[in-house]
Image 1 (cartoon, rainbow, N blue to C red):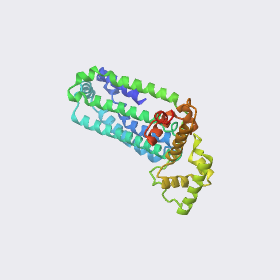
Image 2 (cartoon, one colour; image 1 turned 90 degrees about the vertical axis):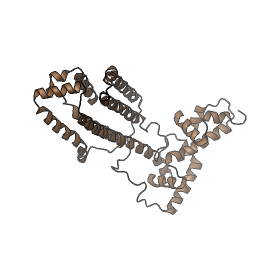
Image 3 (cartoon, helix red, strand yellow; image 1 turned 60 degrees about the horizontal axis):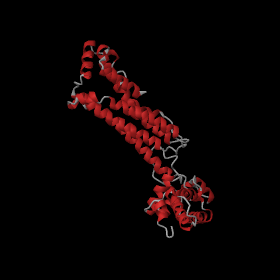
Image 4 (tube, helix red, strand yellow; image 1 turned 60 degrees about the vertical axis):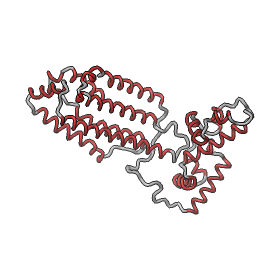
Length: 337
């Protein structure tokens, strides 16, 4: 809605509409200060299953409220002729230096919220690797895509705001359709990715602030050794890693411990998170299958499923990380093939 209003406002301003009706100008200007907070809270609501908007979150709206009240009051107290002069200056891109200072501060605010949003996605991806052995359907690629595209649109907006100040007004006019085309592609891409998106993951627990990992854990060295012994026995005897959707909660239940203690044990004993720990075994299983198979028609896809993976891209990237080769290259170099 904000993009639609902003683009509509830009078109009306470009064609001099506000020079004739100056009282209708700038009604949506302050909304740009809401874009950052909305994007950030949307990101939080997608990541954390128990996130809810609280009263103190309303503080993020203060810049929008203050700027809107102050500027609207100032502008609409001006005589109509002065308002028309302001609109003419905007249309002709003859703006004072203070305008560019203010807009720079606004862009910094939006950029800061984008950074916060990217940081939350990164934090989320790190945390799910402590709980899940397969993350392709829950790593929120579509959310990261949306943030990256918003960043691109944001940078285009920055360029087009400051371009006239460089004296390149002709370039500005001739390429005015670029941001429109970019937003058109963005909206269609988001719809397409939304249609392809599987059921959204329910999220992780919302902690508000970053907590120190395993802080206050009562796990002793003796208990850790017992968990490790049971873990190794279960892994060797039952091969739970062959279950493609294995979670740390399921594995913790098998060895009669909590998921937090199991995660801490894996991290301390192997210097790995749960995701890397499980997939290390899956890669070893894939290598074993390829080495021992007598079937020359065995495909990489069959090996992938038999070793517990459910995504070809994930299988290829993890296999290459562990062995330095793709599964196809590894199989091709085996003796007798």
